[in-house]
Amino acid sequence: RNIREGKPATTTLKEAFASVSAGHPNDWLLSVEIAELAKKEENSDLVDKVLNHLEKVKSNRPEIVHLVDNGLELIFEKANA
Image (cartoon, rainbow, N blue to C red; front, side, top):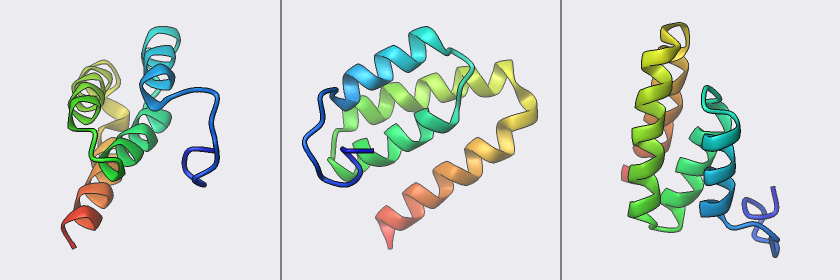
């Protein structure tokens, strides 16, 4: 939340992603938000890692594929607008 609001944060996006992907490997929502913030920060390495993780999540949870895809579409359309 602090990162999104531009406030000082005790955890970096990279650390948050590492924690989420290790501790909650099937979670998708926070990973999509991390992708959005990494895109905003122009951190392409982290964006790539998050997108790879989300592909794994989608293959494990086919029922949420449309949710992940819609969220990512909003992020990348906004970046291209």
